[in-house]
Length: 133
Image 1 (cartoon, rainbow, N blue to C red):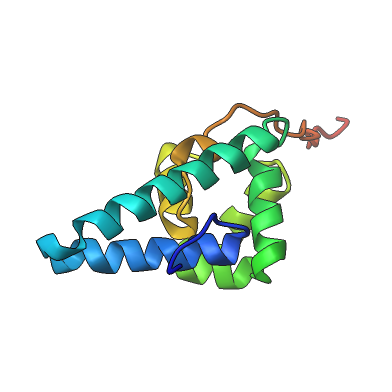
Image 2 (image 1 turned 180 degrees about the horizontal axis):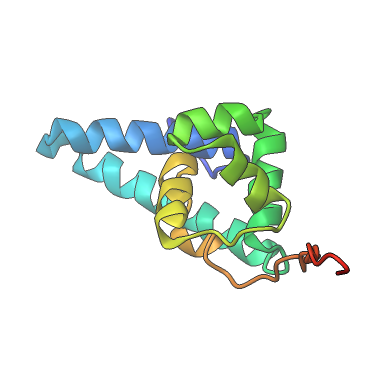
């Protein structure tokens, strides 16, 4: 059997790449294969997204980065953003913007809702620069 139920993120990425290449070829002889890949990919998305609903977007991002062995610097380069932005997101200092949700979802081949769930930022301590007169 050429395709089977997706077992892990690496296999998911492989199937997504195959799907993208087949769609790009725009050849009718691949329609059944494309549809099968879409079913397998959707099933994996539903399974993964429902098994970790308690994870917030930062935890999901951290988990993916750990699994894929991607550093903050490498991710920043791949997304064309600053290392500081990645650091701020991973340390709960900045929310993930709509633009960043789209970049992350596209980059990791996930649905945007994985990165658009609400979560809380850490409270920042405000430093006072007042001087006694």
